[in-house]
Length: 364
Ligand code: GDP
Image (cartoon, rainbow, N blue to C red; front, side, top):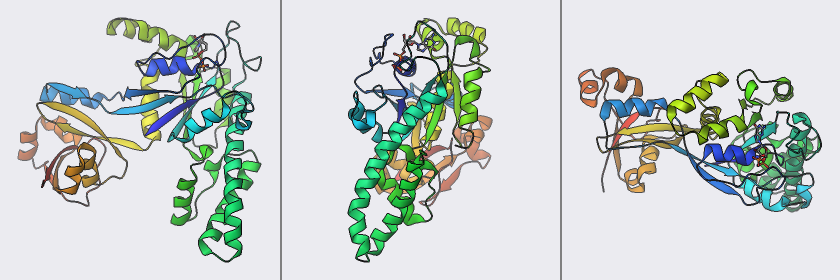
């Protein structure tokens, strides 16, 4: 599962990417500097794993991760192949969710590709390019499906009806994600279309250092603009956070954050939001060798969760032993949870809950 960072050139994408991952993407004060997609594997900050570490004292700890892709600068006309348009759009199609960065800071030294700071216009510029690309794909598909639909093919007719609705939406300069599938067939079709504007999205308002807590007038405009989208808006001072990551010690970083009025980096908030946007959740294994957070889809069953560790665990699944995270922390150990009757044995149908501490029994 991957989340792609998009936005106009010079809004702070690669600086953000650098904050999130340790990989150093190039960043300079001119447009088009991020030309190759960069993928970073980013730890998902989770206070629960620190708590488990304290209790279990394992040899090592492994956090959950999420893949973040820094996508090359999208410019006006990208859907028609301007700049690196098509390459960019291919990269974004492979992502499962979108982090849309909007420039919400004034700084005359940093060139804006369209002359002045205006996140509303910027968002529209990006949205339109993505919508045009989707429209092209929808129309291509419609051409194929139309013929079959005319001959009375039921499946083709279902697909055509959905494509027509999506086309109408895109023609109104709206994103495909507002088209709600009416049934399971439509849901599966929608998934298969892999439309860019159907992917879940969150917005990052890149603000000046002094607006990291309460935002500014640009953030207010963005909030107003997306209020019907059911999308999260995260305020982040990318420049300031990039400076923080340069500091050596945890204490120094904490002081800097407190000066800004924050208790943790906005980047941490963003990573957790991206994880949620990707519909991911975590279960833990807590052994003396390793305490580890594993990533599963929300709604995964116990065998599917086991399969994330090893496919053999899923194939040979017998049962799962489960302790709720809160119980584990409250009683302090597996043995104490057992005594208290908080150690549950679950079968194939069990739907894993976020934070479950699990152990699997399986045949090989
Ligand atoms: P990208 O083209 O969207 O990837 O933008 P970059 O991350 O390369 O940033 C473009 C320029 O803006 C660089 O000089 C950054 O240092 C600067 N920049 C990024 N974020 C901020 C910010 O929050 N505040 C200020 N003042 N400058 C920033």
